[in-house]
Structure formats: C-alpha cells, structure tokens
Image 1: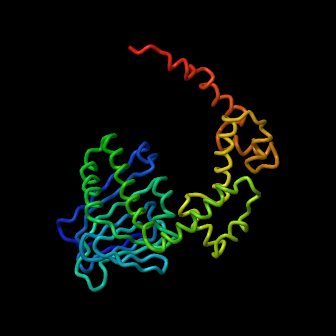
Image 2: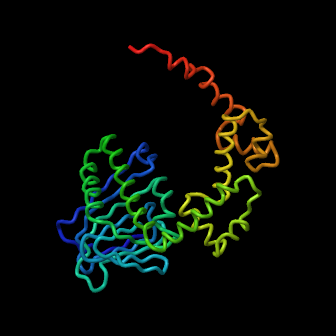
Image 3: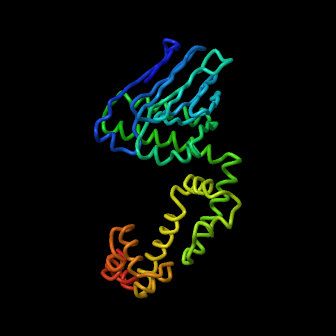
Length: 302
C-alpha cells in the first residue's frame, strides 16, 4: 500500500524502467530513480516494496521513519532504506524544501552490503560529498534512457559505486572504527589459532561484548559468520599444504584443525567443488608440464 502527497516542483524528474530477466540477474539494478524538489508538504508512506531506496539530499532536509526509528537527512547526507518493511519519508519539519536524488535499487550486491549500509538493522546516514555523489546520479540519468546492454552494465557499476561510497563513509565513523578494530582483532586471532579447537566462547573471551552483538558486528565487518571465517581460513591453509608439500591428506587435515580426515575431505569438497586429492592433482599439473626456470633462462634472445 502506498500513500503520498506529491508536493514537488514541476522541474522534478521521475524515471521508471521494467528490467528484463538478464538485468534482474545482475548484482545491482534499478527500477526507478528521480530528482525531487520537494516542498514543505512532500510525503510518502508505504507498507512494502520489493526493493531498497537510496537517498541523497542536495538542499533542505528529509525525515525518514521506519520501525520506530526517526532520522533526519540534511544536506550532503545519504541513506539506504529497505522498503520491504513499512516506512515513511517526508520533508523534515521546520524545512520548506527537501531537494534530493533517489533511486530504487535491488540485487544480490545490494543485499550483501545491507549489513554495512544498515548496521544492526538501524537507519544510518552518512555524509557524502557532492563531488562524489552528484556525478554518479548524473551518470545514472544519462544511461537510463539508452536501454542497451552496455548502458545496463554502466548502471550496475554506478549503483555499486553509490552503495560502496555510502558504505565506506559509514565505516569511517568513530563508533564504526572502534567496532571494526575489535572485530579485526578477533579475525587476526582466528588466523593465528585456526588449527586449534576454537569455539564461540573462546572468541568471546577476547572481547567484552555479548554474543549476539559480536555475531552482528562480525557479519557486518567480515561479511560472514565467525565459523565460516574459521573454515575459510583452514581451507586456504589446506590448499597451500596440498600444493607445497607431499603430506598425506590425513596429516594436512590434522594441521589445519580437523581431527577426522573424512570430515575434512567433505568440508573441502563442499567449499572448493573438488576433493583434496583432485585439488592437489589439478594444481600440480601445470607446474609439472611447464618448462623449468633454467630452461626458460637459457632461451636465446631474439
């Protein structure tokens, strides 16, 4: 359900598109975008929409509301909002305008950035310079009307730059720097102690925060869970040992933290698409068939 008061100046722009199946398969795509010169009574309320919306304020200020959260969006700030949850936005009280760019976007790439752009599900804005954001929206508008495959690729890249720019600014905040440092400390601990029988409680002993808060922060800054990060670290080391040593598979499994060779092989196959034996064979094949360094060095100069 959508209700709105389109109190905008006539020069406002609203562009729409119906993406085809190939566009919908892209990590970043857009269905609507615009530049609204909102007056004092501009307002929108929506129960749900299958997309995100990114705002950037040029002048005045907007007010965004969702899940009992209220956040002002003054000049030079940007914010990503998940429209799947009821929300409303309007010209902020006390302002007679909200001059802003906006774009409805979606795709796996946007979803993967949601932990950064909406940390812990909170509405979070960040300051972004006009020099960074305006050229991106201008590029988006130029490519929008073309409708070619090349233009769709440019739109996807532009949306990626927009969200990455916002994410970078959010991560640069004082609170984010402190949280990021704490999580990087834990990631380094895992990299050093990956071969040990690590548990979540072991990791929590290193930092003074709750389990739920730690899991949220870890996913936000590392893009995955602590357990999956541990597995990836172990598998990366296992790949090195498979190529650089002639250790038996069971010995490699033990060195990277697995007591059971079968469990290691199952995990390795699941994460790499091939068994440890296949990985070793395929990785060594090019090295065995290529000329030696000595042979390469003895080649005549032409």
